[in-house]
Length: 247
Ligand code: 6PG
Image (cartoon, rainbow, N blue to C red; front, side, top):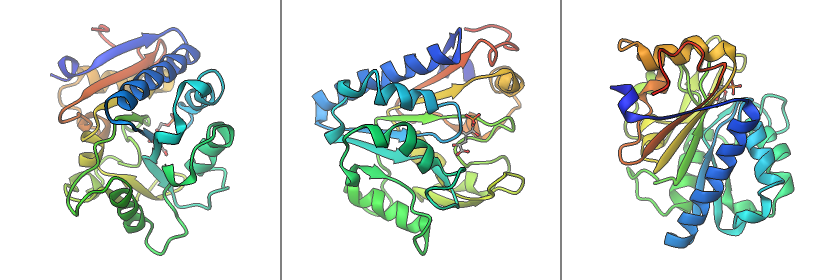
């Protein structure tokens, strides 16, 4: 059952949710540095994680060894890097501009490449020294969920949900403001050691209740289950409002 596989935490406000997430990132980074000397974090786009990135670049800036941290984009929209809808722009403004991290450690999805999806998968394989067909083992992955149950750029009914071999995939999300995108795939996300969904606001209450309490619901977000890792859902009070119970 979904509820048995997820650790759910409900916070009084978005502020508290984001501070707890930033703190958990600091803790996981420290553990990863201690055990293997580096830390990889997959970043979610959207609006919810902005404050997490701001906390990381201010309050917690000196608590992470950025030199040995890899920041990996979970998805990107087909727009230039300075576009209002660019996930890279959002992360740059809230985090990258304020920390000292080697450029080579930031794995962004380059939409100017001839084939952005191939280019991104190749870059990930190079940085993490993977053979063709191998998936990276990210230490931690942040994800959000849209009101239609999409996560990263994996949208309901998309053929991208069937992808089992590639690390990244090109997506056409009819209906989304920016419909052409690149996303990591389900097997790439599910290979993470820890995944945290960050969900806030009344507009997400219905879709959260569906994921947790409707056994027939099969939204893309519900297909995120680490093969061998921990799954957290961090909700604010508003997003949790329609749940039958918290545990
Ligand atoms: C994207 C995101 C997407 C996002 C959800 C929730 O780039 O669009 O990765 O999956 O996380 O749409 O977005 P909000 O946090 O803005 O609600």
